[in-house]
Amino acid sequence: MLNTQEIANYAQSSAKELGINQYDIYGSSIDETSVEVDSGEPKQVQASNRSSVIVRVWNEQQTVGVTTTTDLDEPGIKLALKTAKEASFFGNKDNLPEFSPEAKNPINQPSHSLVEPSPVPQLIETLIKAEKTLLEAHPAIKSVPYNGLSQEDIARFYLNSEGAIRQEARSYASIYLYSRTEEEGKKPRGASSVKISRSLSDLDIDGCLKEVTSKTISHINYQPIPSGKYRVVFSPKAFLSLIGAFSNLFNAQNILDKQSLSSPDSLGTQIASPLLCLCDDALHPDNIGAETFDDEGTPTRRVELITNGILKGLLHSTGTAKRMNAQPTGNANIGAKVTVSSHFYHVFGSEETPQALTLDTAENVILIDSLQALHAGVNALQGSFSLPFDGWLVNQGQLTSIDAATIAGDYLELLKSIIYIEPESEVTPRGVCPRVWVDQLSVTGE
Image (cartoon, rainbow, N blue to C red; front, side, top):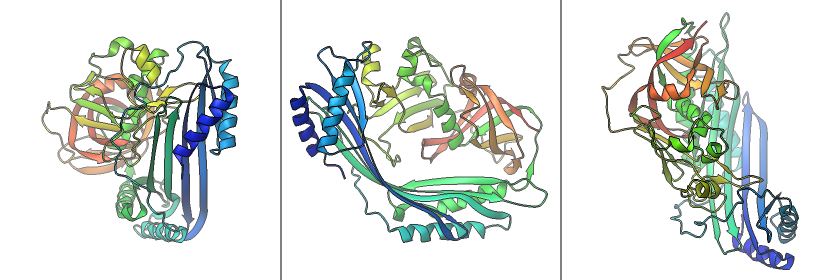
């Protein structure tokens, strides 16, 4: 894996030789092995090692040049520094980036380490067994067309000319299963599940199988529903996908670029139901892919975004924090332009607790398992959405799969229409979230 101190040493000597006084370097290296199977036989086996390095150089006029490379050796870093220096004379002179003021702050490093990868034959055998179990779960399940089992080692580092140096490494394994039914006179139905863990030995394969099996079987006997206004319950996965689709709401760079549903004046205003609380928590204990620093070397942290329905915070880079008189939050991605993105969402209910709602007694409620076509059915700048979904019509605990339907509305109105947030949360790759109840949403059925 990476030797960050060695990279720092020859970056420093190369910069001195090239007459460069100010630079920083962010890089990562990924070792990945993945397998797919089909009908009990290996379909695809892949192993790869990928490296990516971004080099930024400031010249005497403080304009910045940026270049990328995949070469982590001394000649590769030297060439990248030289190229970035040449590019700096053509750099944008507006809102010049700076080093993070927190790039040298200490980090409470989590106690994660690299795990010895499992051999490829074990990956294949494990996935073939999972496929076989799924195919035997119900006569209607005829195939598992999409599946995968992978394990990765990821190393990241950041360093700059002022002596900042950070590095971390972690391992994780993941499994993905998607089953498909085929019955005469019926439409094919499918369901999926993903599980992630720090190693293959800890991976909840049985839980993945149970989830995809139960969902697939529940979708076999589907029925159409009439169009109208419904009380809707979003699964954790579905609600988090909506939050991600409209993440410009609390993205400081989007706000400064006027590409957001918010404005600088939105902080402190009520944007959602008083029941909703939302954080971006990179270091949440359930975040398998936890990162302790961002691309600028800023330590990551828990950022309160929405508290009791009020917009309390934004996600910042060093540049956006300076322009908005705030502190960087560890959410920066460097490149030709510094961008901002979230890490790991944590959704939970406020202390205000309305009367508890339950699917065991609810009538004519739609439970949405997953939203489809988020790339096409969301207008993030207007706040509107129209999305097909997989889900069930629920009557007193009885679930009936919905044939085909679309949910539509305004995102900000949806946030204000939340009437209940269940106390029990579920861990997903995107974050931790409970089921969320929303009143009076428009659903178009067949």
